[in-house]
Length: 113
Length: 114
Image (tube, rainbow over all chains, first blue to last red; front, side, top):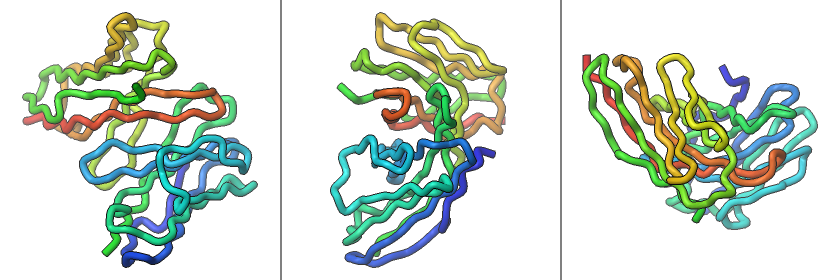
């Protein structure tokens, strides 16, 4: 049990639509990251938030955006969905003062038709 | 330079065998190397991790061997069990302690036969 919960677990969208994925981590986990995992691949870093500010971003276009809230929850928003956005989206959090361990949620499986 | 190369892609062993999964990297700025285990339909779960100033770390049946000069590290699973059948990912951390990101390998699908 990592204490990281994500919703929804599965969803289906059509190309061009927008989606919001949500994540809730434990109190004290002040760093949250989002990763995209395509089928059969390792997770790819999208971005990271620390104290409600983005402090790192991977090679993803601006239509991928996020928010972190004071209550340790977070959102990933994807606009203008493309077929290649179909993937498992993982939220991960790190304990305050932690030495690097990232704890992942179960993910949100997005299918774009 | 920010890649982590993992092999083999898949591995089949008999119960009790010792599967070994290897990873290699180029970037000497990586400062932390975790291994994750992932079951179908689940998120990755942290298994064991090592820092580059240590050559070996054991936790239960799982051992990481780290060769800093060769920029390689590996996961050994002692006395493997059918319940260990999963996909294993090595990763490397890059960046500050408050920021940074994990670079993942491509994964190894392990099957342990009874």
